[in-house]
Amino acid sequence: MEIEVLPDADAVARRAAQLIAAAAREAVAARGRFSMAVSGGHTPWQMLRLLGSEDVPWPGIDVFQVDERIAPDGDPDRNMTHLRASLLAAAPIPPAQLHAMDVGAADAVAAAQRYATELAAVCGTPPVLDLVHLGLGPDGHTASLVPGDAVLGVHGADVALTAGTYQNRRRMTLTYPTINRARTILWVVTGAEKVDALRKLRAADTSIPGGRVRQERAHLLADQAAAGVAV
Image 1 (cartoon, rainbow, N blue to C red):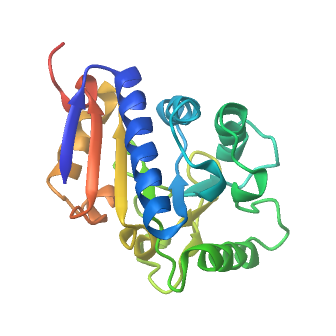
Image 2: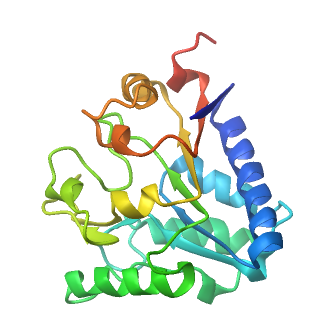
């Protein structure tokens, strides 16, 4: 795993936007399309706003969700609410190329299967995303692959639901097989509360969910606080 430690969350967001833009240009030049999946969080929303000012071939970009809370459309708990406010407000991406998880569906299991089909239609069978952006929780969770949940053991589906709730919401998430097939995994980790989890991630410690993500094609951006570096 390639690791960069930057001074603060703002610097992490800027560097992440630059890396995504460069990956998008390279993929579109090589294959005509670029597909990425993004997670939630304050630094990622800043990253996506900054991405809007980068040189990105937007007509060739597809943006998927890494995970989503089961909540009403427009709810502030929804990642898509913030994704629309950050990315759609800053970038000329065609709205149809921003692929939302249908967590408002009456049948959430069927909705997860439909999202897997949508992924495959854009990214092949099995789907291979060009880039998956991941965050890391203080408890070591990533995406909505949360400690102790049965979703950690799902290997026969590309998209799945958590068995229980996490922070009062059930979730829909990409599974390990989908994440681990990505051409690039971009970790964005900020905040002093992540020090212990980040140490375990860097050690590929499988006692945390993040430690089970493949590291061969991973790039980690962390601020000094998360890396435990004295400022």
